[in-house]
Amino acid sequence: MYTRKTTLACTLAAVSLACTMLSMFATAATSVAHATDLDISLFHETFSETFRGLLDVTPWGPSKWIAHTPWHGDFGDAAFVDPTPGFPFQTGPDGLKITVRKNPAGKWEGGLLSSVDEKDEGFLQAGGYFEARMKMPPGPGTWPAFWLVSHTDPEYHVEIDVVEYYGHGTSWYQTNLILWPKSKKPGSPGKQVTVSVPNNALVENFHTYGVEIRDDDIIYYLDRHEVRRVPTPPVAKTPMSILLNLAMGSGWPIDKTPNPSVLEVDYVKAFKRN
Image 1 (cartoon, rainbow, N blue to C red):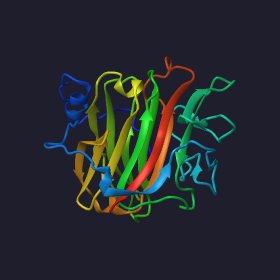
Image 2: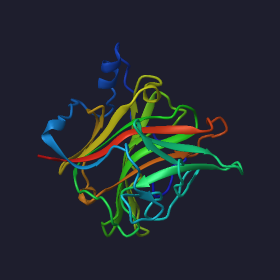
Image 3: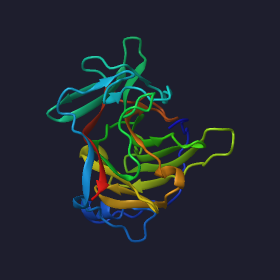
Image 4: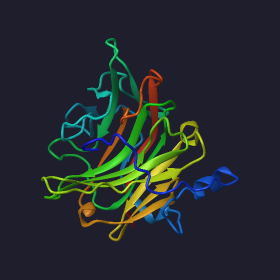
C-alpha cells in the first residue's frame, strides 16, 4: 500500500457457494486446484499480540507498535491519527477495536498499527506464518486490511496483503502480492485474487486470515484453509513487518459509511515451523 489502487482488478472468477457455511468457505479458493488446511501444531509462536491489556503504541516509537506507516505515507480518505486515550484504538477483554469516525471539523480519522518504526526497529520476520483474527466493519466505504511489508531489498518494496476488505463488497475480499520498485524501473502491477465468501459472513463473525511464506510458495488462508498459492519471488524472502489498519475509500464512495465504524481484532500472531 505504498501507493493506492483506485480500481479493483479481480483476476479470477468467484467460486460457487456450497450448501453449508463450512463448505462455502472450503470452496473459496479461486486459484488453488487442491487446497489444503494449515496444521498450526507444526508451528511455534514468534510474535503474539492479543490486545487484552494496555496497548504499547506511540506515534513514532520506540514502542511495540507505531501509529503510522514507517515511510510516512498515509492513504485513503481518513487520516491516520496519533493515538489518544480511547481513540482510534481501544483494548480490553474482547481484544482490539480500531475506530474510524468524523472529527468535529467533519473530517474522517482512522487508525493504523505497524510493528516496525521508521528506523526499522521492531518486529520483523523472514518467512513463516502470519495470522490475524478479525471481524470486519459493516457498511460501504470501509477499507480494513492486514498486510506485510518488506523494504530491505535494494531494488523493491514488497507488499503482501493477507486481506483487503472493501465495505461495499459483502461477499468477497482481496489478496495481493505487489513489488514496488525503489527506482524508476517498471514494477509489478500486482497479483490480485478475489476470494468469495458467503454474503455478510465477514462482518457477522470473526475469521482468521493468514499467509505462509515458504521458499517455494506463498500460501494464503481463510480460517486456516488454503485460498490461494503463488510462487515466492526472491525479494519476498526478506524480513517482513506487520501492518493492521482501518482506512476508508480506496476510490469507493464514503458518503454512506457509518459514523463511527469499527474493526474488531482478536489477535495478531506470527509463527515459524518447528
